[in-house]
Length: 349
Ligand code: CO
Ligand code: CO
Ligand code: CO
Image (cartoon, rainbow, N blue to C red; front, side, top):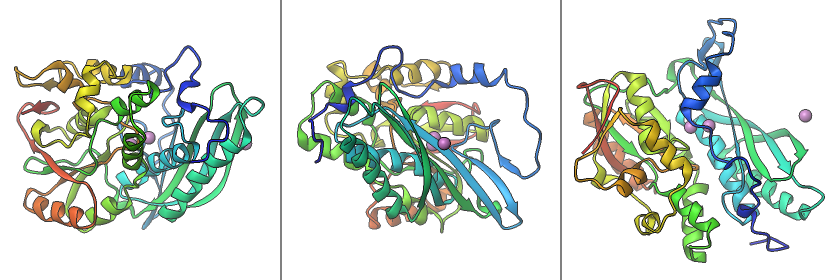
């Protein structure tokens, strides 16, 4: 750990915003007012679906996948923050079935008041993750800002016929999630000094793990839809898949892997605003069991950074894919099923 001045990076947020993702309703209101862009038959995935990245066809057998993600520090260790930001940004390429190729750094940093070594460490962490993903850093852009923010724009490639979106889930598909949830509650707990070093290391490890192996493993199966679980939480992203695919998604709550101490910390008040917003936005499209407590409903909506892939796979192949993921060291679990009753909804069982 190399944080020269022992700066608590996660506490540098300035007033006015929380540094979390702007919610889907607020975004929709803004995007609605934009004039439509010129239609282009090569735009395979664009703004009108709520997919993870855009996909643009270059030739009959090559398309580029583009995505961008950045945020305020989520952990205090700058090297880890860089790694998390990179793993999170690259993840959208994997979710679309692509292979990351190039990346650009996006930097906001108080260069006159914070030690430059902190920024070097952030960039070093991101660089190491890019190497692990096999992607090449081609440049970046930086501004002097009161509050540090970091992320990347990542470009990947995919065969136009092999693009995975959140719109192809079919009744009978099973849902596999490749990382445990609860990251938002745990990172809020980091800000409040509620976690031990060991617990911080554990949640950091979840966030810095690339979805590379999960994506490569699913590649040999009949995957109908895929997304990664990030800011809108498990149920938020599942809901986008349900709406995009015009199906209903059942989530088996007892099979959803949740990181240690999440429930206890949530009860102690460490539920982030983003998580509660996610829950509020889902009102009317999620049915919870009557006896399910509010805390547990929030946990399923917890805003995640650098979460796992949510994969809708042929029902008959689910066990084999799950075994394969586990064998390859991916912390995967079968957490739900796709049905066709009440299309567009989520049912928590
Ligand atoms: Co995503
Ligand atoms: Co994204
Ligand atoms: Co520039």
